[in-house]
Length: 422
Image 1: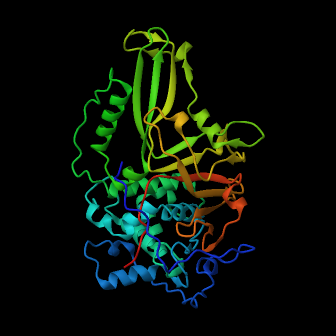
Image 2: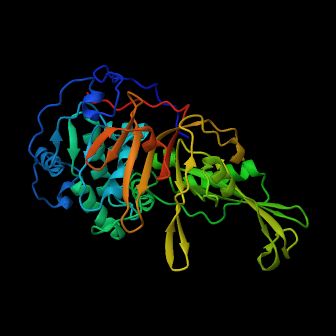
Image 3: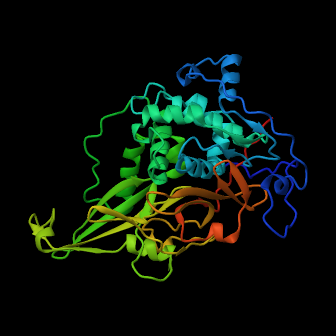
């Protein structure tokens, strides 16, 4: 885990918003009544994104990249910037807004630290091209100037390296988030030469030692800011019911994809996590080959969390398959805004508590749905609602609803400096 950063610094030029009786425009609310500047006319110059990924960008290239965003000025502060819909791209916009509000990741890009860690030779990445475009978006939404931008170059580069997102069809925002973070990880992987790892050598070790060795082996191949912030470790334990032998396996995770308990009433996030960690009996035709008994035995298998990340991503599995059809579950899941404790599901050291900072909501049907996001503003601590290019102050029902699909939590004790522009 990364070392704690210095405590957050709040810039004086963005004061907390005054109390309001309704949900006004976020631009006036965040600026405490300061009128926004008149919107500049959109600038749309067509350029190929490939030329923008030079190691030595000229001033003209930077200006062209900014022009491609077609920015409309007038935002009173950071994160008050909407994303223009480019044709059913709400799945992309909702995730991006939540990631923009992940302060440690935003600080990393605003400070330009990604430049020194870029791994353009990694064949599993995008030669740094998608990361370059993502960095430009982060700087644009945090620079306190723009109230709307169009992420055209980002989308074009995404289409080049993730063909499943080509076109204007609606996509799954969790799949997009996973794909984006995977590509950012590979572009920023600090491992330049991947060493061979023949055997993890954990069989027979105590659980704690086995977990540490498995994680060390994983980090020999995967070491990036994405791993530092977003990835944790799951532990699967199988116990032989004949001899009592325990066997452990470990895997890294980016999302906790948790099932929803059946039933008509509301459930809690802890209910979903209990179902995720339910013990499973292996018997009959599904017996386990015990390494001590050396014959198939009945066993019990359980999944727990061994290592928690700084930023915890939770995927509520609302979409299920019923034969050839895909259904959507509208179960209302209650989740805490602060003080989330996962102690009951962790097999490692006692975890810190988590605070919610973002939610991706999906409303409507599978064929005609729409994604929006709500995020806690890191300065005012107010919740903002992002609906493509429109940003407003969120109502309570936007933060808690049966439309919640992805939850973004951050470790409450992790301190990170807010991004600042000198």
